[in-house]
Length: 454
Image 1 (cartoon, rainbow, N blue to C red):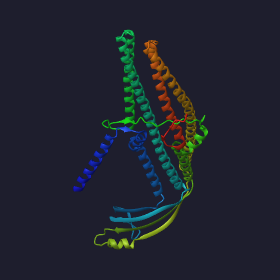
Image 2: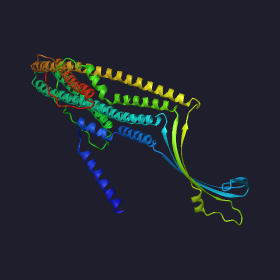
Image 3: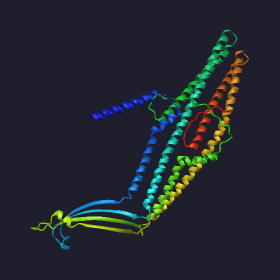
C-alpha cells in the first residue's frame, strides 16, 4: 500500500511541475512549437501506434517459420459395436478409451512463400515508419504556416498601433493650431476622423492576431489555461543574390530523402514480395513432421481388472517421423485470383509512386519559382517603404505649415501604412518560402540566422 501511495505522490509532483513549466513559458519560438507539437500531437501518436502494430505483424510472420508443437488428449466411452484396440476384434461391450498425442511439424519448402511474406511485412513496417515521418512533416508544415500567419497578424497590430500614435500626435498639434487660429476646425474634425479610423483598424488587427494565436494554440493542442504567445524575433533577413534556384536539383535531392516518396517506394517493394508469395502458393509444399502417442483402454468386463493406467501408457507408446508432399492441382482458382490481385496491387502502388513524384516535382518547381518571385517583391517593398517614408515626412511638414490638406496627409499616412504591411508580408513570405525550399533539400523544417545582404 505504501508503494502505491509513493507512486501517486511522484506522479502528482511530476504533473504539477510540468504544468508549472508550461505556465511559466508564455512566449514560444517556432522551434519550441515544432518540438512540442511532435511530442504531443494525437494524430502523430496514433501514427506511431500503427507503426508499432506493423512491427508486431513482422514478428508474427517470422514466428511462422518456427515448428509448431501440439499436445492433444481425447477420452471417450463407447456403447454398442466398436473395435477392441488390444485384440483388434469387434466387440459390443461398453468400453473406455483415452489417447494422448504430442506432435510437431515444420514446412521445408513452400515456394519461398513464407520468406516473401516476411520480406513484404518488413517493407510495410519500414513504409509505415516513413509514413509516420510524413505525418510529422505535415504537422510541422501546419505549425510553420500558422506561426507565420500569427507573425503577420502581430506585425499588422504593431504597424496599426504606430499609425494610431501618429494620428494622436497630429491631432494634438492640430488642436494647438486651431486654438491659435492657424488652422480651421474642419481640419481638426478630419484628423479626429482619421484617428477614429486608425483605432478601428487597430482593433480589427488585434482581433485577427488573437484568432491567429488561437489557431496556433489549437494546432499545438495546448490547454486553455496555459499562457501562450509567440516570439516575434524572426532573425535578420538574408536575401539570396542568385537569380534563380535550380528546381531540378532540389527535386533530385528531395525525392531521395523525403518520407512521402520513400514510404511509397517501400510499399511498392512490399507489393513485389506479396506477388512473389502469391506465386509461391502454386508450388509443391514439402513438410516434415514427428510425433509421439500412447493410450489407455478399459473393456469394462465384469470381474476383470484392466491393465493399470500407467502401464498401458508405457506399453502403448508409439513414435514416428515423416515427410509429406502437397502438390496443389486445383483449388477453385484461388491461387490464380490471388496472383492476379497481387499484380493489380503492385501496378497500383507503382502508379501511386509516379503520381506522388509528379506532385512533388510540381510543388518543388512552384516553391523555387515563388522564392525568386518573393525575393523581388521584398526588394521592391523595401524601396517602396523608403519612398513612402520620405513622402510622408514631406507631406507632414507641408501639413503643419498649411501647404497640404488633411486629405493629403491622410493619403500619405495610408500609403505609408500599406507600404509597411507590404514589406512585412514580403519579408515573412520570403522567409517562409526559403524554409520551404530548404525543407525540400534537407527534409527538416529549420530557421537559420539571417542577415541582410542587399
